[in-house]
Length: 476
Image 1 (cartoon, rainbow, N blue to C red):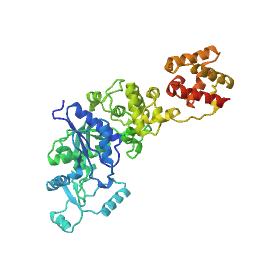
Image 2: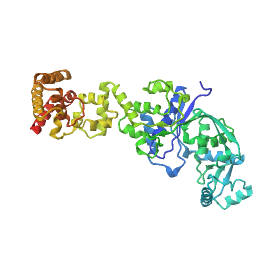
Image 3: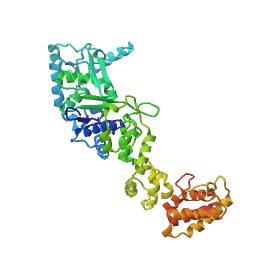
Image 4: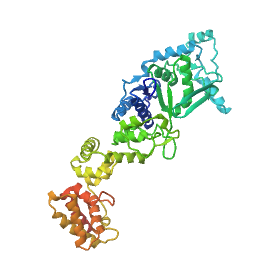
């Protein structure tokens, strides 16, 4: 058990819809906090106004709530606390750990271009690092715009322990004099994240590995302000199946997109939880409560995690199959009513029973079962089984039609239907392919679908008889 009350945070920037990578960070932060009876805080890091996307905050909040990861606070917006960041920036200047920089954008670009041409690392050249008080005062009197930069030590090993990667050490000579306050009065990420994490009492910072090189800068700010440093855990990258980085700019990796498609929240969370973490063994299915109990940072992988859509679909299928049948029917019917244009009266319990074992997300249902909701069309030749012929196929359909017509509506169930069709096969010197194949095509218009018996149940007696008659007419 940790010595202090565990407080974690999820701190997205509202620059777009909540990305799958961000959701993973939120999930792990939530799990760790809840495991130790701590707090999970949501902070909106909205200081980069040029990249602000309208609706992004609503998307983040809505997605977290729908997935059951509701924070323990009202969202905290950095843009509402600019005076606080300025206070600490000024304090760092006063203590000699930061300085005013009046360099123009043109000068900075010129430096950068020269460094690139000389194949040098691009970093600030320290031009304003040692300005006198009088020089600074004169520049300010001239209303010269300025930023505040962190004054990096000349050569100091900055070390810390990452909960995933172990001991990490970076020499300050390799780090730039980072801007911590912009000329518009807004802090950069580097100052704001430290100030907020400290003032919110955050004990564990879980974030993506792209922030690992910035951590020494943050540690220096903690040190200069005399604050305790939190625990850090930098998560491995999420990768496509070709091992390229999963881009934040890909619309289909917005977490809300998977909810929109009708994946179960539990399936999404279970899948996301295993992108870089696994407690060991062969078990893969975990409820949120079980994840809270099992999660630990020391079982995280360092290597990038593959975002495999096929695996997500596998989870989706498993969760549907494990649902109570009536719950699946009622919830899927409600979803279809609100998210599709199918004829909902055709979505019967028989269709739901077949769908529950075949779909990974609800948006698949109208397409896979299009033969239920729409008129079908197919080539008559498709009715003929590959080892049969036209005359035999007509015979099989006619005999089946007679048998099915004799089944009372009250007896229209799987056992009776299958028994009657097997009698057709046995009593007429036919094969299963001569009977079951053309019925499948006649009812679905497809060579791949649920079984003929399932189709007969889904469509009901009257519709089934009508489609078989139509098939016979087309074949003749």
